[in-house]
Structure formats: structure tokens, C-alpha cells
Length: 595
Image (cartoon, rainbow, N blue to C red):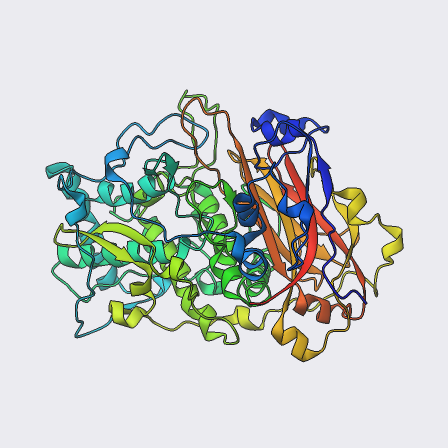
């Protein structure tokens, strides 16, 4: 039985891969790359031992701070924290705010920067939560009545009217949408480094504050301080369709720039990757509930798995939390227009509105979608165990900037948004059937023979994942006691995932399943989880269309369910669902880490 984590990911990496960030390289099987600065070949080790070797200490070809992020939250927190110098994320540098950029397209034709601010922005105060006499209650969108719908339409209509009468009014509909554009599409830079609120632990708190002020502005516009946004209840089968009030043409809640598939009460796919999968409504709903179970329960036993990894300004290595990956991204993809960069009318479509970060806030359903994302934060903590808010000072003290309902600019900190009721709102309860939707079928009859598949050391790095790929992988320990499981989570980690970030991406991961696995039905105990990505953005002339990401899957529960607890080796299978021009993976390993 192994007593420590083995250096499974040690491999020679050609320098051509480390330096080439143009997406065309992905079709070249001779290249693989890392986020480094070397012009020579170098080694990268995914060794998770606490004792750092001399070789690792001398990895001058790789910036260890970037490598740390590449391994994601748990790796950094549990094993390499002394190497990190993480600091709270500062508010935007307003003086350097510039044009945002459409993913795989030109600059946004208008400025996403905030309206003119005081010359001395250092005088912008910190926001203090006002006292509340009555909680604003957010209800499931599919259950609201006509009176509420009329009130909601009126509020959005008045917000849109501000665009006509006062385009620079920070309370206007477009100015509110620009908040997401500026924070997410490259407009804000600090010290020359792009500020991004996705793919890290900033995701949940940023969007919570965003909805908080948006909701209060709507209430102010209709003189109703109790007005609350609805939430798109996509984690419940009854809410797995576009809420009807958003599909009434001619109303303020309607957005013509949606994918036609969202109409006619179509059941949504919480794992969509931009391509329609032929299946039944019942199977699709079951798959959705299984995805929710995996993302909320199986793969998120620890805070950094749920929230995402530490954020380091300017990094291009992504480590989003479970819910940000799925279902957050797929709902954006499912709702936005079909991407068509060669449209016959000469007007390329970049997934607007919901399917692209720069335009997502222009669809009123965006805020309804993120209402349920925010609700998942509470539902996750209610599951118990180690599912609690992060306590790291660099997270608690990170800051954002918003206007309140009185057009006053404020800075806010994450530490002040952890209690919804103190913020003056709560969610009306809704059933959560996904809690009891653990996959209960097995596609494999017994344990697969690990000697019949190549070891991970013979497979990785994978230069192009375009076919189902199986390999065997050593575990750091076997036959663990319940006390050992309670102390450390077993994590399957894929590092240095490289892909063309202008495309939708998804691949699935299975344990103890062979290459003939059928991914259409997720009711398989062997299904471990998935990686997805929404297209990103770059400045015009920037040929760096490659992102580096990490995927971490908690597998303690899967090992139990598949009778693999006593095994020293297991079979892992990767199933590419959509990989664009190419997808490469540098290394894989299993680690034991503290939550």
C-alpha cells in the first residue's frame, strides 16, 4: 500500500509547447505546452508530497506561483501554501479602464467602463449594509403570479428608459449590464494585468454583490423596497425550462437574442456544450439531477472545490469551482444565440446575449440565472460536513466596486456578503431532488483489470484528446479507514489542461469504465464529473488563444460506490464531448488533501 503521493506527472515538456500559445498548435501532435517562460526543455512534476525536492526547488523554468494556481485550490491550500504570496483582490483601477473585447471577435463597440467618477477615487467609501425591516424573498421564477410579473416588467422597463434619457446614469439597464462586461471581458486592468472575476474563488461573492445592488435599484425604480428578483429553479425538474415570463414577446423581460431552442417549453440541458444531444425529456431531466448531485455533493466536499481556487491577478490558469463549471456555464451556453462566425448576413454571432460574458447582462434572465447560482451557495452549506465559507483573509478582504440605488459609488468586501439575511434577502424554499439522485447503475461488471490498459505515465501528456482514452492510475493509499477519509479527501487532479479558449469545451471523466462507455446516460456509478468552459476574450492582435486550466474531482465516494477502496490502481477513462480545435492535458494524479 502506497504511503505517500507518487510523482506520477513527471514528464519532459518540449519548449515549443511552453512558448506557443497560438491555437493552431493544438492540431500539432508533437507539441504540448505549459504556462512558463523557458526556451529549453524542462520537467514538471505534479508531486504532491509536502517535502519539496531539490529538483522542484530549482524549477527556474516555471513560475511556481503560476504552477500553484494550475493545480487549483486544494493543491495550493493543502500542500504548497508556503510558496504562494496571495493577496486580496483589489478594486478596479478606473483610470486604466479600456475597451472590452468580444470573445473570438472585435472590441465591444461601446465602452463598458463605469460613468465618470470623482477625480480622487481614493475617496470612494466602503459600503455599509443598511438595516432591514422586512426580508426581500426571492421566489422560483416558474411559480410567480401575474401581479409580480407586471411589477418586474415595470421595473425593467423603467431601468431601460434611463438608457434613453440619461445614457450615463449608472442605474440604467445598459450600464448595469456593463458591470459584467467590464469585469469579465478585459476592460479592467491593474498594473497592466487583466482583472477577472470568473474561474476562481471570486466568482460567487462578486455575483452576489452584483445581484444585491441590481435588485435594490429595481425596487427603487418602482418604489418598492421589498421587491426581490426571482430565481431560475433549474435544479428542480419543474424549473428546467425557460421561465414563461421571459418568453413573452414585446415585454421588457423578453430578449430576441436567445437561442430558439429555449422556447416552446424545451427542457434544458445542464451539461450542454453547444451541441444538441438527441434524448428524451425524462433522461435529460435525470441527467440534470445527476449532474447537480455530482457538483453539489460528490465533487464539493471541501470549500475550495466548491468556490474555486485562490485568485492571483493576471494569471491565465483557471480553476473554477464545481457549480461555476456546471451548471452555470452550460445554462449560459444553452440560452445564448447559436455561435456563427460566418453568418450569411455578414454579422457574426458570438453567442449573444447569455452565451458571451460581455453581453450576458443584457438579457434579464441573466440575473434570474445567477439568483439560483447564488442560492446554491446556501444549499451547499446546508449539506453539512466541511461545507463552510472560506476563512482565508485574502478572500475575505477582496474588494469590488458598485453603485447603489441612489447613484452613489461604493467599495464592497467579500466578508460583508456572507450572510444573506444581513444583506436583507432570502430564498423561498424549493424541493432539491438532486440530493437523492446519486447514480445507482453500473456499466461495468466488477473491477476492470488495470493490466489491460496503459499506465498514466505512458499516456500523459495527452497531446490531443479527440477519442475516448483509458489508463491506469496509482492511488496514494488504499483501504483507508473512515477516520482517514474524514481527515483527507482523495482528489483526482488533471493539471495543465490546454484548449482553444474561443470555443465551447467539455470532456467527461469515468472511474472503472472502459473506452466503450456510453455518455448519453449519466446514471452510471462510474461517472466522476466533467470539465466545461465558456469562450473567453482577448485584446485585438493578441494571438494567445490558449487557456490553461485544472480539474479536480473528489473521488472518495466514487471509490466506495464502485467497490474500489482496496485497490492500489484504478482505471480512469476520459470522454471528449466537444474540444474545438484541440484539447491537451499535461498530467494527472490522485492526491490526499485536507479540506
